[in-house]
Image (cartoon, rainbow, N blue to C red; front, side, top):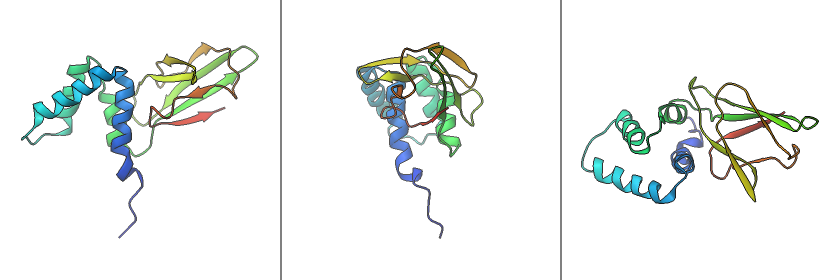
Length: 147
């Protein structure tokens, strides 16, 4: 009789939107979804079948992304550390899945830049101060931690 967590209702749709942003090509994305439904219609399938299909059709290793969203309750958090004096931003994913790596758009709404964080710290130059540096959280179901 416990109240279910909110992600039970929204996480699936938001994860699909995240995958769409990772694929980053709407024409290819919609063809991928149509192909997925045609390929698996009238069949019982397992999660591994879905992951293998998406990996094969995209040419990407999306297994850690699927595992993070489907096998763990916590959302991945993009950790950002700013050094305005040097004009740099350090970043990494804090995730339960050890091999988690997912591209994400950062910058400003007028000029997004795709970075490819992993669970290890990386640093990039940024002319944007901390207050103006954004993460495209409308495209990715993630948390952002700024330091």
